[in-house]
Image (cartoon, rainbow over all chains, first blue to last red; front, side, top):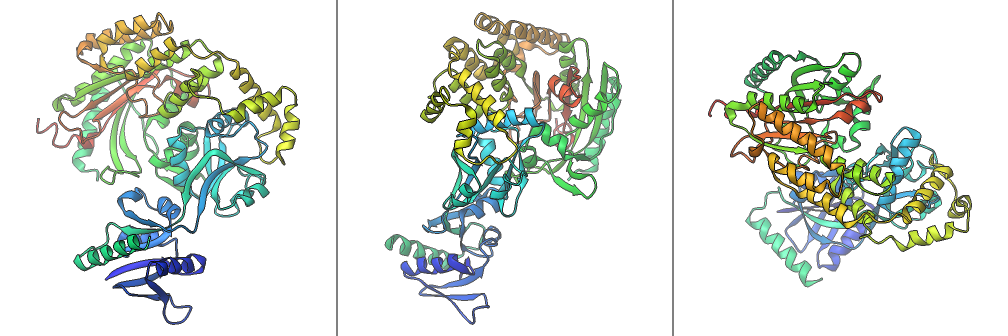
Length: 230
Length: 366
């Protein structure tokens, strides 16, 4: 039997249930509201309700066959994520962009080229590297390495990241935004080429999970169903 | 895992290095993270294990011996000096699960030698000798040639400094060259901003842009805008100079046959003349130690991305028929690093390390 992990609460869970419903699979919670159990009608699939943040790890270990979570979480939490999960479907909700943002008053900085030059200047002027606050360390570091940006330091910020520049603990930030409103309220702007990752809720398949014949048949049936219902 | 056979092999290599006149140095496994981060940037976090000490703050398990050995030398010893060491280094592996996280390095470093070409050859020849039973395949490079070419570009010092800073980052280096040669179009937004600056003071533009936040001050923004204005009227780097750089980045052959083309290129970029002299002196020094420069593979840009501190001669020694193995030995010249760690006082430095753990089954079987 295939085990499908979905977010256990909130809008992400509701939208996941809706999405599967549109594709002809009825997901529902069982028991009372506090109990994290669920069922799937119309398929040999066990529903496992998990926190969205735990789903990448469960996919990587193969304890669940399929899982719904933000693509940003998979990229952040799984080293070499492409070797551990396969993307089955982008689900079209839960949109969130991981972006690099700098103060609006930096009128000389629009691009990563500018950021790199400003970082060199900043380090020479202030004696320390330009600080970028984020909780998405791996993705930000890989993005900046790929684009050859130097002389920056990542500082950890687990919450209220947009406020770190105002509070003087960072010069720039990398954070998830859906509308950019919070960034503007904190006097920040997104770099023109500062989109690190456009995240959305995604149905992933675990590569290390046990894919025996019945599990494969069930997966094929699911793929056919998704293809047919668009 | 490090086996006791590996440790024996490391001890043998260390003994050979001592015989060659090197003084053994010890280095702490826990190194302050700050120095390494300042030197290598955030990328080191992907390669080194970080840990936390309640008093000393962020520490790293030493990813190599270079920094502590250079620091020890800069703290007092007189030039010239030869050092050797053997011990564990620790590397995070984010992409290849089969690569070891801890392994031994045995190293030999020469500081302040009066004849740099001879010191380059000394380190290469000694590491080659240690690995001789494995019949290693050598490959050499010289980042000093790239740096010399950049120094010789007919353009602003600011542009040369930007290229020098990114010698080790091919993507950004290429992007800078595209901009400096006029191949990459300037964003329209930037042209508009520079045009506006002709009539409106920077302070006013900054005030219009929003509320000032963060440590970077208006004066810094104004100074960079000044630099951008100057750069906008700077003529492009000529095609012939850019071609020389492209040629250097892709050039491959033997060390001996690289010397004449370099002299030819020095017609376009005269700074390559002294670089060719240095290469020739090194080739001669290697020949004196029994390594034929006509048989030594050479590419100037080799090991460009390996470690951000090599700024001259580089080399690797690899096991024949084993492309799956990391090089058995790597080394190179890092003069600039000593100045950074020595608070401005630099000495010429060249060194290399052997990985005893890779030799199991190679030397014995050969």
